[in-house]
Image 1 (cartoon, rainbow, N blue to C red):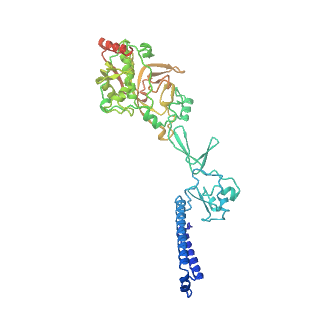
Image 2: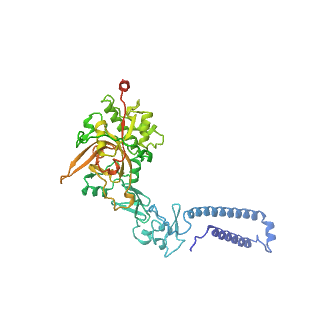
Image 3: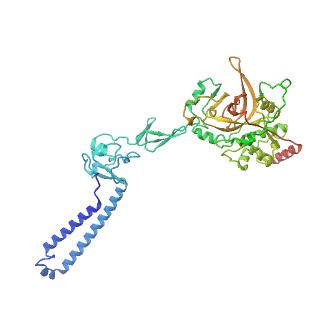
Length: 489
């Protein structure tokens, strides 16, 4: 292995040469040992002392200069202690491309010459032909001065006609891409929430619904969507074993319409969908929305509060995770015991939270409950394709079944079911659906709502449904009107 010369060897050579010159000079002048030394020393004491002092000063200065040179060389060599093959000099691109290094040195060296170097930035560069072996450690002007060619784009990547240096990045949807030392982009392989391939596959297929790319969700990974856009924890085994309320329905006398909308039956009393943003708190948004609707309905419009999901997120901390997820049974417990404030931010104890019960998983009984008392709360499993839903009757598709596992994930969500309906197919068959309000804003889906297959427990939406009841008294309405007037004085 070839090594750099050390500064110590230069220093020793210089001192020896200085000492040799001094001895010869003394012999010539008769100041050293010899037959004439005694005579001349008697006459030249002052001259000898002066010359000795001057030589001592010169030797001291030379030693200091060598030490300074050694320190400078050490700093130069500290960047690289040998000719590195794996870690090229120009990792971030060639700096000072127009500088004169090999030219200033006086020329280039054939083959490999580890002494054919020039100081470059805080290290050294080479002017021998060996430096051009791969991604190199050549001086910036080596190619032009020594080879007469243009310097290569070392450590650069191309994108859309532009060049990027090693280490520079850009984001492709949810994946960060970094320019590597080999000139290739190195990109993350995350599954994105908005996958154009999935959207196109849904829209080309005969799935009964259409997909869209949402700018507010673009750039998020599927893992991030599940982590931040859902936020309902699955109920415990004890809660899942709650007794279902069984309704005595007479099929002969109680017929249910083919289409029903809570907003049409109770105009002005059903609240618009909200947007939970990147706060995993659907447990709070769906609970507050159902409670708000039912108070408005049961008070016959005298009380139409928009209960605050933020109040639940901030204050209901018993076994709840706020924007990191929570339980709907815990949210109803808090409403019943502590109450909640409205979006206008004054305290209000919700009478609609006096009692909540799990409904039967029968779609007929859920329909009757909605028609009699208003919207209900439902838990559902959200799959990767639900995020791109735009319109139609949603059913989970198989468009991602052939992809790796990271493209096929799901999480638990909670929503508000406000009605139902049916659509006729071309072949005369019908497709039944629920009308449900999501909490991803009005720019998502059908103005914040979505339709999903009914009577099939699609995405487990009929497996755990909650209805809430309460007693609205005249005192409740008077207190509400009193607070409302004070708020607007």
